[in-house]
Image (cartoon, rainbow, N blue to C red; front, side, top):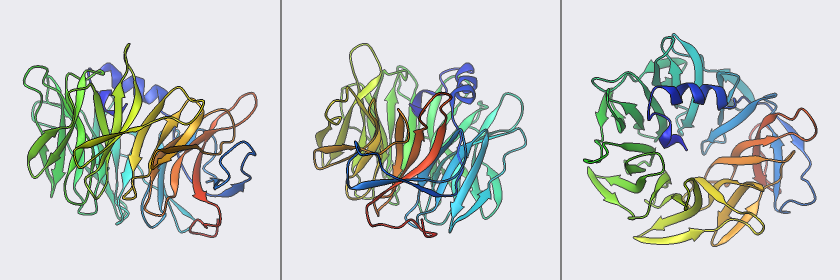
Length: 337
């Protein structure tokens, strides 16, 4: 998961080798007969090796493709560019069309960035450290992510040009901030990293540990509800949960799936993520497998209209990934799709 990307220098290079990219345009793709009947799949036309990462409430989508990043709004692409070292990955977009992610600043250092009205702003790094990545942004332009301080990985929050360290566990010196809502509440990890942390929520400067069970928090909505996954025996995240008002609800995988790794949620507590059957949307105890082009798919983000951004692999030999959007039947994507 995102929170485990900076335990050492080498994971950054594994990221670059493994991540798929994204862009956007659009062609309607008929839904396979085996998929849930209430959803349809839209290929965003970003081309091969692309992935849609996030969507805002205006229906604007950001994604990655081959080391470059794109914003799709009103049917038009904007290429976001990069910091001086090239290679860019986007992570999130807010309702002001401000985009965050990370990019190389030289041959072996990456920094989080804020893209605003065509300008790429370098968020810098924590004192003593070199690397950072921005993972989420709210409508107040507050940004969270993680950064090294020269010896450990810590979560941070960026406000008005100031990068603030959220600290680390006193024993293992680790934290990670994964998402932030408009009230400034932050969801993330606290502990040892590498599947040895616990889920936490920061609110008004106070950190609340949600559980003693190992896991992490990857999403928080405007109601302060948190979603994430717990670690299973042997390591790895595979048991999803929804935390609201101090209580946990299991976010179980769809029938026939062996796991469900959750990503984000909206204010209706609709949760999205991936399973061994493909992309999944969950609500009120029911999980649905989303239509897909080939064998695999992943749902990365969901807006307040229920539109879901992600990717699907294509069918047949030599398959690739395609940036896609899932919408409810009868709902149109902005731009006439």
